[in-house]
Amino acid sequence: SNDLKQKLIQEIEEYKNKIENSQIQYQSKENELQQEIEQLKQLNTQQQQQTN
Image (cartoon, rainbow, N blue to C red; front, side, top):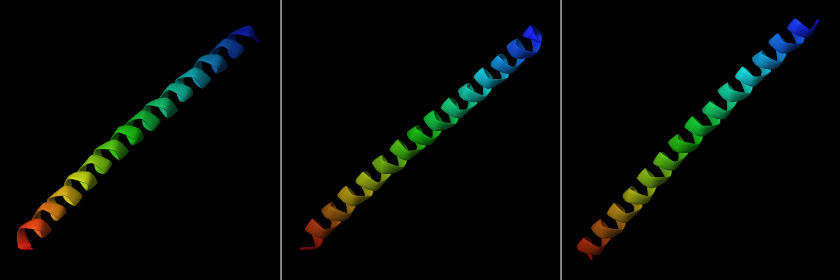
């Protein structure tokens, strides 16, 4: 019974780690995309200023 408990605890820990890792990946991907959006906005602004 104790062995099973240890095994389960270990599995739960592994799942928690996997979830945390996916959240971190998601977060960093989101940040990347935000930066790209900002760059595009700036480019757009610059181009508009040049046309005026």
